[in-house]
Structures are given as C-alpha cells and as structure tokens.
Image (tube, rainbow, N blue to C red; front, top):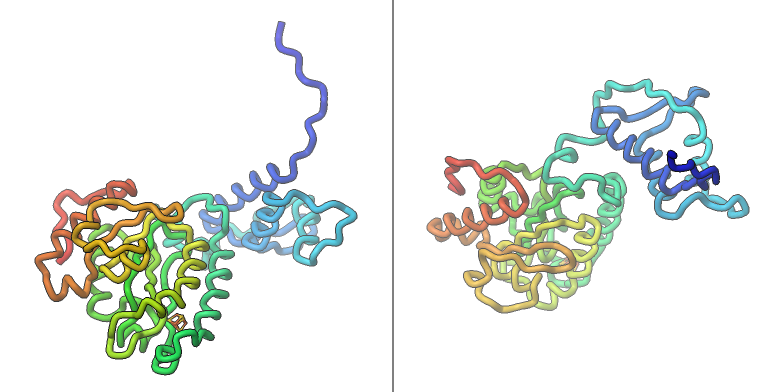
Length: 308
Ligand code: SF4
C-alpha cells in the first residue's frame, strides 16, 4: 500500500519562499534581466526586490501589528502580484562580467550591491580620517582599495606610494604594473579580485608605516574584509605579512604555505617592488601563485611563462 499523504497542510515558510525566489532572480540577472513589470504595470528593479527578499529570508515576514519601514512594506504587494518578465535584453546588465567571474563567490549571503554600499560607507570614513596627523596633513588622497567586492581573492599590500597618492588607487605605479602581470599570468584581471593596503595614506618619502599608523588603520581594513569576506588573501611583502599575521618571521620562511585568519586562507609572498629590485625572485612568486591557483581550483597554463 502506498504511503499515505500527510493531510496536514504545511505551514507557509516565508523565509524559504523568499530564498527560492531570490535565487531565481539572481539567475535572471545573470542572463541580463534588470527589471520586471507587475500585472498592474508597475516597474520593479530586480536588485531592490532582491534586497527585500534577503530581508525576509533573514528575518521572516514582519508581523501585521509591527509597523513596517517604508522599504520593507513594499515587499508584500510586489511578491504577491504575478510578475511578468518584460525586459530580457538589458544594455547595461546589473551583474557585470567581473561579478559573474569564476573567482567570485556564488550565492553570497550579502548581495554585491549591498557590499558596494557598505564599502562606500567605509570609504567615506577613510576620506574623513585624520587619525595619523602627519599622513593626513601630507596626503593628496586616501587610497581605499579597488576591485570586485564579491571577490574570492584579495591582494594585500603595504602602503600607497606617490603614484597611488596622486590617483587614489592602490598599485598603479611600476610595482602595480608588475602586479597586473602577475594577476594576468594567473588568468585573472584586476576587476575580478580586490586590492588594498595596510594603511590608506602615503607615508612621506615612502618610509615604512609605523606600528601606530598600522594600528590606527586596522579598523578600516577589518571592516573592508568583513564586507568582502574573501576566501584567500595574498600578503605582498614583509610589512603586509607581519602586520596582518602579527609576527616577525622572515618572509622567505612564510612563503609556500597557507595561514588561517578570520576564515580566510592567507598566503605570503614577495612584494612586486622587491621583484623590481631582484628579478630572480619572480620564479618564487610564480611558484606561490601556482600553489594558490591549485588550491582555488583555477587552471594552471601548461606553457606559462610565469611572471616576467
Ligand atoms: S593611514 Fe588610515 S588611520 Fe591613518 S590617517 Fe590615513 S586613513 Fe586614517
């Protein structure tokens, strides 16, 4: 005899429903859909809708007695109405090629758009920061960080130099160009990863950042990494490695192995500026990158020239 079907009605699970709908919307976005039209002709932005669904997935539907914030109160009618897709072709897809890259984290609990907003807030705090009096007085710009907020991989350097100070972006000088070659040799691009530094302001004369400056800036770094949540962090050079892992071990002894910090795998290698002074070390860095790529599941080119 077949198993009897449970006649007790299953209670509606709003969080589960929201999660399923959100996954479907993410799939639509990847195929270029950016908005929908409800049966009553109302336009709905997919990113906004996903943010509402993420709230429901996390907290469930608000009770009827509870006074709803304006943004959340818009959820119910949008979800309840039958939704028709009308804009399949989108000239400016919300999910960019870099967001959809194989190094990005799929189904991330924090949406990329939300990550952008959260990073913007940290960036504003950095721009206003004067905790290091000397650096704040001499900098042209703060150098926050750049890349994909949804990246699996973060490159973590030391401090901005003159070019970075002028342009407000990390690794844009000679060492930055060499870092670009390392990234390209890995089959990646700057847009697919995230790049940041130990401190956000240039130390005058390119001196090393002091422990006090690193300490002052550590809160910003921590907030950035909490938002990005990278699986892998590559510390470039001794300053970044020692600062991040709170140790004094020579960089040559730290290479070729992963350390763990706050849920990320951390790999230490030579700084590109050091490679410019001693090109023989490029081979070592390429060995480290292959070690990393293997762990990340990235293909290693058979006839790669490595880092040149
Ligand atoms: S280095 Fe960091 S902590 Fe120091 S002034 Fe710049 S942003 Fe502020």
